[in-house]
Image 1: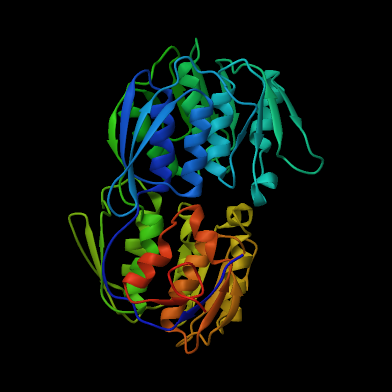
Image 2: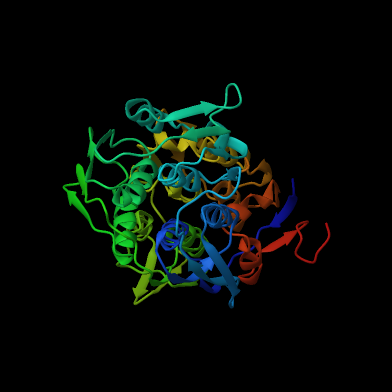
Length: 435
């Protein structure tokens, strides 16, 4: 575990925001299922993305990696034809998306499959799939007592009706949307409650359409999927990630002016709402084309519903702490099952650094302060907590010691490099400095 020391420094400058992790997973999998060669541009090979690439390679895809500028890669992907597991097991590392997306795809082929993972992924909830397995007579077995992973699977997915709660993670729905079009008959996914992850499903449907797959969406309650479809090869560029961009947008609000490039304001990404949240809190934001410029602002606390944008909570916790009055975050129950219990972890780092955050069942109540004091905190092995702590240092009276700084590798391996390039000061991590 790497420990770093972050000095209080305001950030400023221009930054090209990393490509969307959510879109990248979906594009790589779709390309891997296509018959022929696809080219996926603007990919960041974080740990999560490597897990998805390796999963598709295990199923027969051939991927050529070409490094471009700014840590980006272009992937040439020759799709699985035929789809067949060529390894004993697939390691999803700590990637929940890889795990939940790949399971229905594995059930398109007949070979027994074992899925493994690390960290909190081995206990991430999987009940919606287990219910489907029981109903569809698909064999599954937990190979280690008390853990969901390693998980052994054997059986064939069949066309038909699939009923799921709309309140479960959208990853289960997306996993089925990947696989069901390739079956021999028609299927329908019916949600028994209101869909709570609509933006992620919109991203899935948009990427699938780019690769030639048609899904009929009936009011976000039923999804009709014709069988016997085929993925078509596609040249696809991944757009910038509002989930990662949110950290830099807040950095500009609490620091100095930052220009964020490659943020598509017409995107389906749910975390695009960060722009409206910042405006509502009083942030100075100027947007034009794919560029957003943020400047130092006095912000006001507010009530924020995060049911459609849960990944924003750690950085919203930092902003709420540095805003006047009270910020109340609601409808974030699912955050307790991420890389960390993110409600607990966000409150923990805020309070240790001198803020005032109280956990509720589904959110946080945060009282505003002028500045953080500083102190020693842990990332809780969560990339978004680590990045939120980095931004908290901008308005800290003393240095912050962060344990587990390498957690950013999960989604944003060069985060600390970008942080320093905009004026941050970090000692103790592998950046050519020694503590």
